Length: 385
Image 1 (cartoon, rainbow, N blue to C red):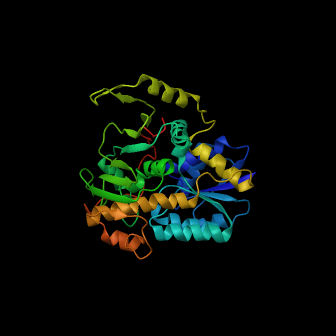
Image 2: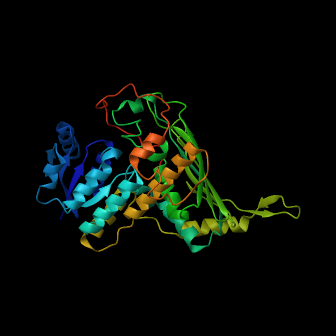
């Protein structure tokens, strides 16, 4: 039985608790840690984790017997320091998105994992959704043709008070706005499906959240050989549309699933290619459904990797790739020039302090509360549904 600790007891920690609870035949949550110990106890009580103890200090958890792995569910600015401490203490680590605040911190985490021999897996739960896995399989098989153009919409809505919590809305603590905290999911999926772009152009702004230094709206253009991708990230979109659309030489693939196919009339104008559309639909329908989805599916794989029966399906280097793409977006938006990947160690956007110093402060954070009255969250129209 794998012993697990949750580091943090906020809304996303509750999602982890539910996922571990689905896998009670493999693991047991034995500790929940939070700066506010009463919050840790409240989560234990709410989720019925009878064998878990509430802790107020991470060192206390890492000194406990019977803790084999931790889920890091803390604000982004401490992801790196806590992950490194846990790895050095001999624990496997599942760390929530974004993996870290900078490429420098990602590299330090990867080095700590390598030195410890323990597993470090960044959360990328949307990879473990049936529509995403089917579309990726169609791309990889070549059956859908070559991708020509990708559209990624990470469109969310958050009220102004969303940024009143103490750590949100600052470059130093949240480490970014909608690209870092929201579009990171979609950027990970894009990288997973299509790989890294060669060059990035971007613009960011803040149009609706006056208690945040960071962006709440942005658009990026990613250049690939023979292909473009357009990524829109927003916290001002009431419909919260989450979608990835791939236009290929054979037709349209998308999540949520929708397909279309065209062929040319003698004058070049389009008409529907019913045969191609039917073939794409048949291929999609023939691909298997995932047995488990979301956090539970990734955690299932994480636990299997710990006991050595599977390889981790999300590795630390892939979490780093998403951070590198976000840093390229931020650099391009600040410099107003295209950014070529990779971002090197001497670049201002490699380290947290120099990146934060380079970013605009769209507004001054003037309101700060320790805790909201409710920790309830809604997950929007999550990609993969």
